[in-house]
Image 1 (tube, helix red, strand yellow):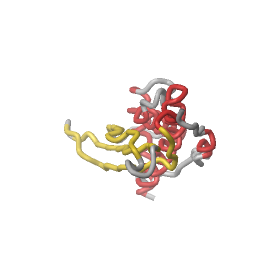
Image 2 (spheres, one colour):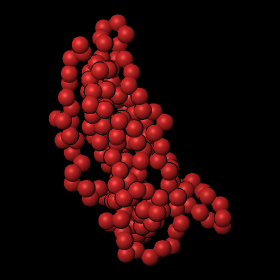
Image 3 (spheres, helix red, strand yellow):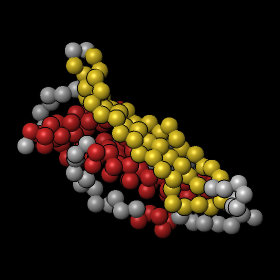
Length: 170
């Protein structure tokens, strides 16, 4: 019971800090901004689930994307590229005017799709944007699970993968 209450308090504190710093909506555009999209998804989660909790902790979070790149799948056997990603979540608690680490969680991998570079870049990086949505959902679920919080967003199923449009290089 105490662990659940602590998790709920972490959720409430996240919500307060995130909602003060993020725009009202955010989506990955032109293949950029996956870290902000993840931070916004987390903010929305905490806003929806913990608005009425009393404040007892001051938590600071940071979301970063140290790895976000399109790279060759193989120099010898293919001209296809894949999207490699690495997202980090760091949580710190402020105690006595000092920030102390609470948790650090990473989510990394390679998107399932491979296609020519031109296909990734087509329509202002539309396929990167679609893959980014699936990656944000996957990492969001991983972060919430690692923090012991329930995932209440039923839309996290990766269904946007069907939207990827492979095109042939000219």
